[in-house]
Length: 131
Image 1: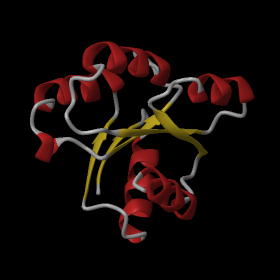
Image 2: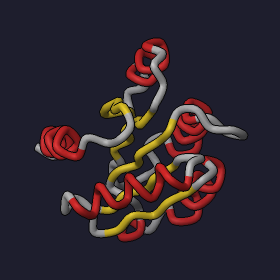
Image 3: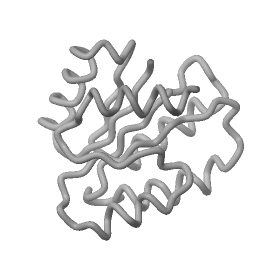
């Protein structure tokens, strides 16, 4: 499974990448420190199914472009353009329940997880999505 990770912390990107690898969930992991860079990358490869990720793990609180800004831009940029569905899962260290409720209102968000990533819970969610 191909993952795209977006988080403004290099440590979080490293830890999450290692967790995915150690759990045997990923065939590839592409990381971005800035949401706008990830969005640009997706726009570049949007017609190349073999390069599109299966899952985007997205931090909520980031400078420049927040996770919510990314979601709004993603919906506006792609809508139903992509021929391959991408599951978006929010990862956050926030303790604010309002952030989780807001994230859950996006139909493209398939789950909201606390950091660090619980790979067992992620695996269960991905199995549910793919059945």
